Amino acid sequence: AMHLPEDDEGYLTEKGIAFELTPDGDGCLLLLPNYVIDGEKYDRTDTTLMVRIPAQYPNAKLDMFYADPPVKLRNGSYPDRADHFEDHGGRRWQRFSRHLPGWRAGIDGLPTLLTFVHRELRNGK
Picture (cartoon, rainbow, N blue to C red):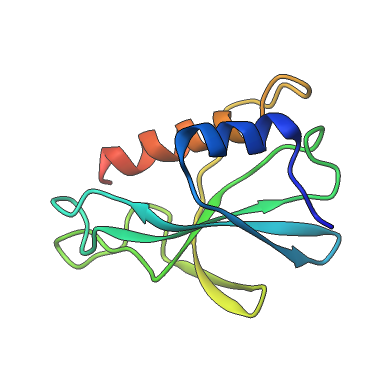
């Protein structure tokens, strides 16, 4: 069965974040349903957030994040670098092309990425 590193599962459980894993090629997709976003900045108050987990993770870095249903700014435009769509796991995902500044293997993990995602989405750009 697929599973995340213990630290990551512990983090999600501790935060009360529901998640599911689905296979995707060599790796898997981490889905966070009902991920809450700021309805004053965006055209919705939640979405399913998705992160691609490569087979070599946690040594391989996590990069970018995805949303379905898609998220737009209140003015009707897509957020910065979030106007491309990709198919993964039988769903069409809006890709947020955001890259963590560095990846420290053995130190960084899902908490690093989710903190980054939260900050990026809070910016409302």
